[in-house]
Length: 357
Image (spheres, rainbow, N blue to C red):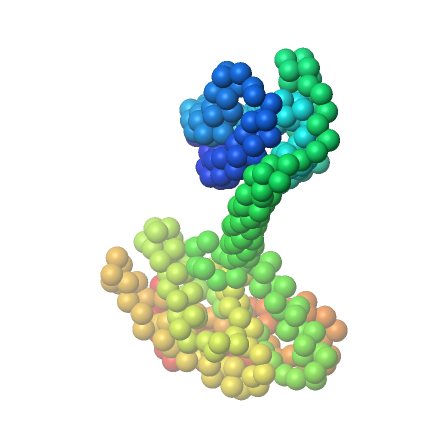
């Protein structure tokens, strides 16, 4: 079943409860208005069907339809038609008629907005015309006290039920929106921020450093000889290495640090309020921990990291220049032997020897 089918079934389930409650309360309202008119037996039977059995028929009709969404909209038009029919049958008794029309209009607006309100109004007018033709009613300008009290359940309970349904729908939509936003900012393989989301955070951190005249550093991390890992051990092993690196980053960074996957086998970290020397020590320790990892699927596999670091300076006029310094430091790390941390403008920090491919 496609998206429309799932959406239609969801709509049908939501409306099943509200339609059952609304039509049961509406039956009380309409019956109180019809009783003094002494209608024939078939009218009472029609009232009972509309108020008690129609909600169940409508739900099964929508549930079994090829396109439940369209079927439920058809059911709503039937509701509107019958509402107009009962307005004419009640001889336009003011309070029961106004209550019926208002509840129908509220339902149509909640489901389909202004467009469906207009379509529902046309269906109501058609129902009024059919009812007028069958009953040729006279206008009854007075509402009895019994009829007033009979309208209260519909006036009080149905808006409450409809409001609760709308609240639940809004809550669900809000949660789904947050989940989609998180997915759009997250790398699916590693669970870290993706390239775009991390660069957004870098811009935020750059502006904070600029505004508050505070320090910080960024690191670009590259998995050494990653292509050789894929070629030798397979892409599944390569994915495991990337996930392991993201795990090490999550476990060893501070809560304020921001890690992301910059692309391919390259990762990136924002290290707020950290001097370059401290950042280099932290990255060196992380490189050491990663080098000691073992992989059950490929016991012979040993992997090292090359890391480039750059500290924020007031000379950086934009975040791109800051990032470029870290990229240049990473390039030096990769071209001077790999498996090391290099700080921009601060020479080479050679790592402990590690076995690389």
